[in-house]
Length: 224
Image (cartoon, rainbow, N blue to C red; front, side):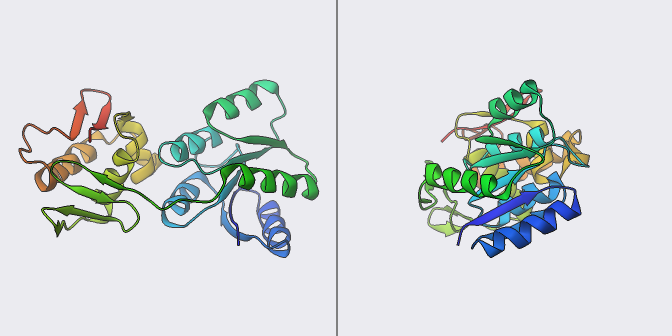
């Protein structure tokens, strides 16, 4: 069954979509806000996201940015914002489709079918190998010299976000928002502590890292 993450803060819409999509053979994961949605996407196998832009804790565009930091799951925006500027912003941020409220169920079902067809079958998660360690994204495990490295859930979340974006700068704010939540977006000392722990566990010389790199004042970068 296709699993749909529905992100909407209107209980009646959330409930109606749960009932109707379930009746059409979908598994539905409901999320009333952006924080819950990002957490669900990281812990469950989601095939497509249906996202409202007006959320109580963050703008839907921030949710799109958070998802696009590590996944290509299809995202259908379902919003009362009708302006062309809003549509362009959402599509530029990484959404795949845009449906305005009020909407017809038949239209939404057709958009869901189209989105899942374009996405195609999900492939197995890769192994990411460096000279010092190997990250098994499917099994959420890190190996060094053939031995499993003990990782806390937070350490793993930070590492996974970086590893899924090889060579790309991941901003401090993005890491803090996705790992700890929007309320921690300015708590950069959290990152310094956890990056130090990861380097001690994974780098040959933690004082001169070659894989977990700092971009001063901006964020961090994973170099395979």
